[in-house]
Image (cartoon, rainbow, N blue to C red; front, side):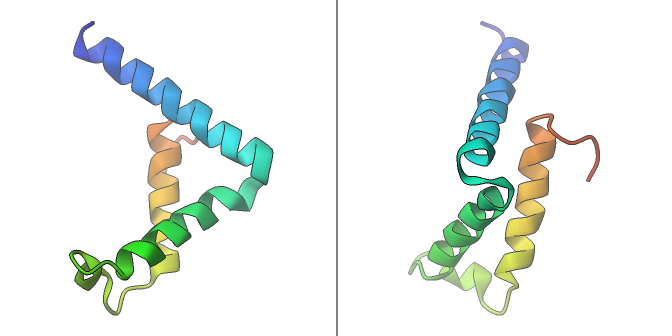
Length: 77
């Protein structure tokens, strides 16, 4: 399998995961999951300092857009 085929497989897997989350938990759930992830990371003793004085909701929103774009679910950021 070449890298192009692997990228296509990864994009499809990501797309399926995002669609499944949205289908089972609703539209806002995807971004809330990311927010919970960044809240947990902000409390981590090794990497938490990256998130000091940062707007975690804004970070999770931007990451949500990035993931949706990477999955081919939106056209532009």
